[in-house]
Image (tube, rainbow, N blue to C red; front, side, top):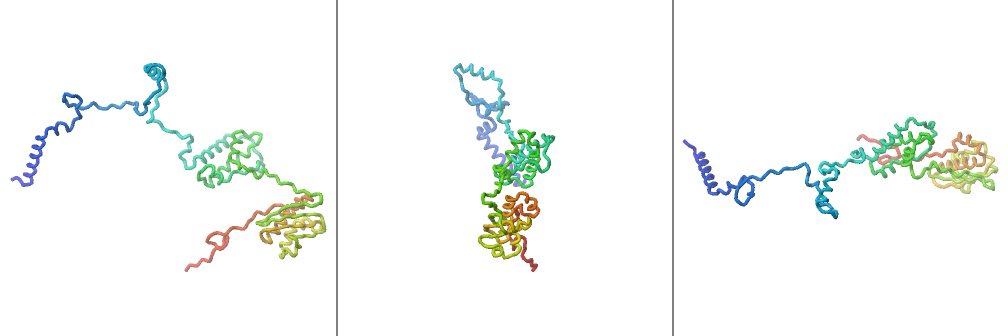
Length: 329
């Protein structure tokens, strides 16, 4: 016994079959291509065959000479120039470091390493006798290269530069000289020669000294040991004994306290900075009168300027290093 569902399926199939028979044109053109001739014969189109030479790489136009078109075609066929396939072309970077984060820095590092290996057998200068050179700072280098160079990487670069700088100047290759010039600063501070301090016709020597934010200008002349600072005596200008001793320490260390008169103009900073600035200025002026006192003044610590500065205050701290009291609760 057939179920009602099965009977409904059989009826639907017969109905669809009758509907298709009534429209034979649908069955005629469903799976075939368009007719290729006017007689009505239906046949499949020929398959498309792709050649190895892509049409996009072929020139769309050509310049013709005064000769006939056939002559120009024969000349083009006889040309031995290879055909360029644009689909297989690939742009090759000029540098192998192109795909790194810092290509210019990497190229500089590889170039300096190559020079160092190539000229490692050349004679070098003794330690400490290489020409003093001011190299570019890391900020200047990063600005020129426009790359995020780290401090550790730039130190490696400077190490190679210093090694190449130790090559003997008479035997240094031209390529090394050219490379070193690109890493030097525009202004070399080591080439600045200070003007010698001289004694004028009146027997006065003038020198300038600095310490922290203080500066002092000292006029030194032979005399009886008087000391005037900004129009005041030494005892009235400096209240602390340590500052008085510091101001005339160069004369006291060389036992010249009663042989020279000091007239100083000082400004900026505090009393300690001004006193130590006067110390340096007096030592420079004294060496103009007696150059042989340089070793004694150097042992006394009066010749070299003290570069120490006050350490800046940090955020979150009370001073440079002092931290606020930590409370657990």
